[in-house]
Image (cartoon, rainbow, N blue to C red):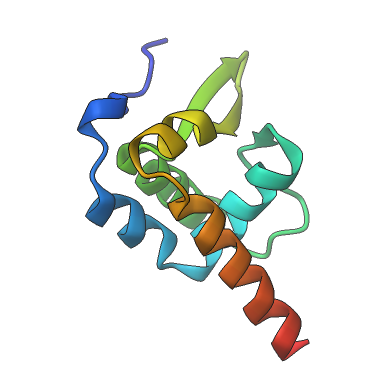
Length: 107
């Protein structure tokens, strides 16, 4: 199996990262990655069709937010936190903190 393409750290673009995080489903996926490390490609408790979920993972990967590991037919995603922090210091933490505060305020 070929390794899915992802930008190098120096090729990460802030606009692509922000676009990827602008969708609520993708933001939730990144929140889960930030909290729990590696996430399976189809989380059980997410009510999103598999085809749509695949598209969300593709957008996150192509923006440079995730890396995909294949194990048989299963795919596992991890957040490229260190690389994102090196390229855009504080951006990911700020977005995740803001999203958490917004979720808490509406609950």
